[in-house]
Image 1 (tube, rainbow over the protein chains, first blue to last red):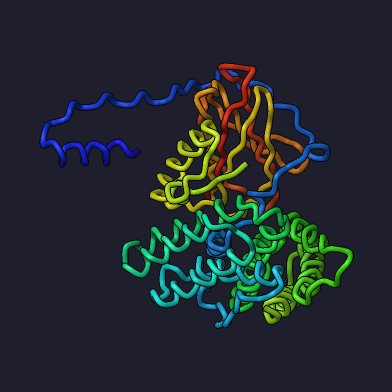
Image 2: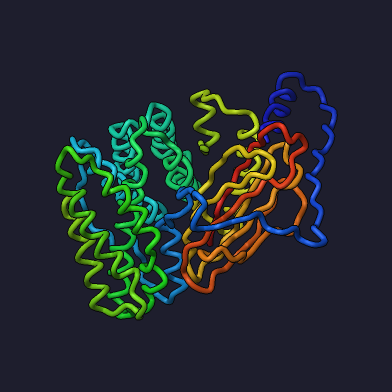
Length: 277
Length: 139
C-alpha cells in the first residue's frame, strides 16, 4: 500500500527508471468441497463480546429508508448546546455519544464551522473521559484537515464512521468499563429518538418494529448503567437513563406490532434523558 | 482485542503485536475498498486465536440492510472460518473457502440479534497464536 509512495520518492530523487516490482501473489483461496462441521457453539454457555452489537445511526438511517420512511433523521435533530465540560463522567459519555451521532448524520450537509465545533466537543469529551493522548491527536488531525478543506465530506464520513465503530470502542479509558457503553448509549438513544419522530411524522408505527425492537442492545446498556457504584447515588442522567431503558426494554420485547402510543412513549422517555444533558 | 486506525498508529507509534497488525492491515484495506461499493463500517476488531479456538461476537442486524462479514488472518493462518448463528445456536450463514480471508454477505429477513463466530480451524504452527481481524459492514 505504501510501496507506490516510496517508489515515487525514489524516482523524484534519482530520475532513474525503476525496475518494475514483482506483482504481489494473491492469497490462495480454495473452495471447500464439503464444508467441515461448524465448531461446537452453545449460546447459553459461551461468552461473547459486544463490540459489534450496537448499530450505528447511519446504519439506522439506511434501515429506516428500507422500511419506507423517507424522513431524514438529520432534519429532526434538535439544536442543543451541550457542554462536555461536565464534572460527571457518565454525563460526558452520554453527551459525547449524542454529539457523535448528530455529526455522523449531518456531516455531508453541515457547514465547516459546525463540523469543527462538533469535533472539538468530541475531542474534549473523549479527553475528559481519559481517552488518552492518541485519540486527541487523531481528532486534532481531522480538525486540521476540515479547517484546511483537505478532506472531502465523503471521506470525513468514513473517518467518523471508523472513529465511532472501530476506534472508540477499543479505547480503554483508563480502565473505566462504563465509558464505551455509555457513549454508545448516547448515540443509540439519539438514534431511537429520531427514528421514533420520523416514524410518527409519517404515521407508520409498524415501520419502527424493525428498528426499535432490540432487546439485546437495551439489555447491554442496562447492564452497564446498573453498574453504578453502590456507595454513591447515581447521577440524575444515569438514573433517568436507567428508567428510560427499562421502558424501552418493555417496548422492545412486545410481541405485537408497535402502535403510535408506543412511538410516543419512545419519544418521551428518550427526550427525558436528552433534556438532562 | 483492539482496532486502532492506521492514521492513529502513524501519529503515535503505538506498538502492536505484529500478527494482529498484519490481520488488521489486510482487513482495513477490504473495509476501505467496500466504501466504494456503498458499505459503511459497523465495527472492526482484532484478536489472537490458537488453533481450533473461536471468538464470538454478538451483533444486531437490521432487516432491509445488507451486511458483509469480513475477516483476515495473519500469515500463520492456514484456514480461518466464520459463521453466523442465530440466538438458538443454528448456523444461518458461513464461508465456503479454505483460506485466511473468509467472509460472506447476509441480508436478514427480520431485525434480530445474531452471533458471529470466528474459528481458527488450522494454523501452520499449532503451537502459536495467530492474529485475526473481523469487520461488519453494511449498506
